[in-house]
Image (cartoon, rainbow, N blue to C red; front, side):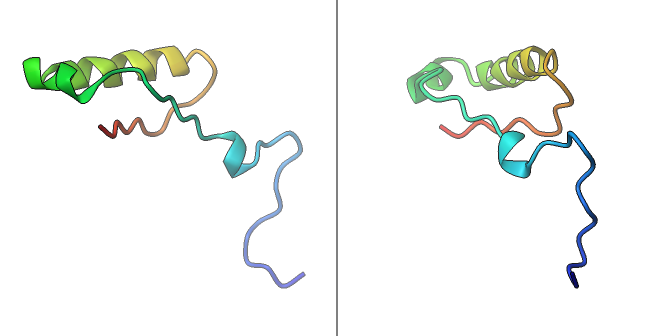
Length: 62
């Protein structure tokens, strides 16, 4: 009742439904050989995920 957050719109996904975690896509050793490879991974992941909707951030943790 006294929550400051606006009401969700009908059909709007929850925050937990908007996060994608991809594991085991690469090994850290891949980036030791070519440090620019991480940018290619980010661009490829962004372009593939954009096919399903708006992408606001792609973070790669090695």
